[in-house]
Figure 1 (cartoon, helix red, strand yellow):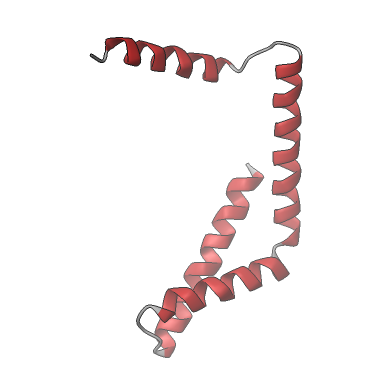
Figure 2 (cartoon, rainbow, N blue to C red; figure 1 turned 45 degrees about the horizontal axis):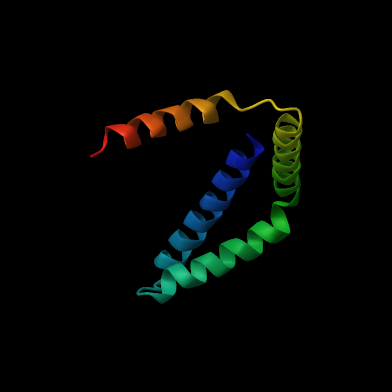
Length: 93
């Protein structure tokens, strides 16, 4: 969930930068490029706490998945997706 929050905050920063630059009069292909640069800079400076939370969440998730693989446990969703894919491949001519 922290990853979703961080992503939404970054998208909001991009939208805000885009909107401000548009209102200032910037147009054309340079508008989204400058908005991305501004949003990346501001997110790097201002969103350190959400970024750290997202990184911790992803690291914990990777550790849980690695531990599950090491113990022989499999992700139920992944097994279901594999079974569906196998069925689709068998049914295709």
